[in-house]
Length: 229
Image (cartoon, rainbow, N blue to C red; front, side, top):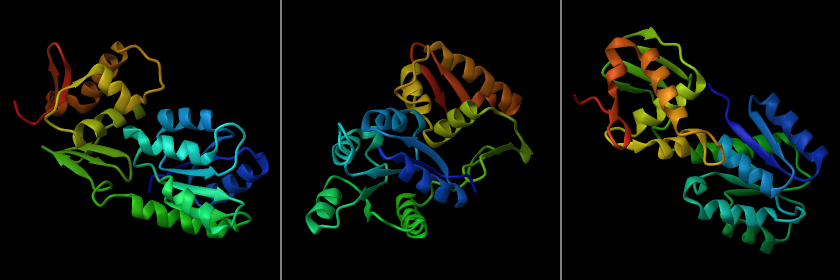
């Protein structure tokens, strides 16, 4: 199964390190940030599967960052677990009201953290999101990150894979290059719109003669994924 990515946001390096070791042992991919500003940029760029967010941080607090992420459409669905040294009931309620999915009070055992994290991720993965998608013999498996055409494995880079996954889950709609950059590359990445054309060309090449026509150029707009001629 593909490793889920967890972003740990805590200004105390020893705590981040302790959590990172526990998560890596449980086969999670880990990202780290020590302040809310860096964390927000990493959420936009790397699109982690879950955020472990410290309540008290210098500058912008964890609560403020959680509220901001829940307000923004692109990050509203991101699962958040608050890490707090405060066990008082009203702080927990405030954390949950800010949009956090769960909270865990320091000190905690790594085993408890991993168990809570698994439970939140299970709840957050909508049914069907990890199901394979098949269109005209082209099969994409989100769990193994494999793509095949009529049973034969296709080789493609990570950007082409993400582009194809986005297209296959958003069929029959035309997207501009700018929209594709936001959805596939992330809003904080500064790349030329023409970069999209380069990756579309690579993706079509990877799909081969039979399936490359599924990615259609829409003149004056951008691109569309469609099984219709």
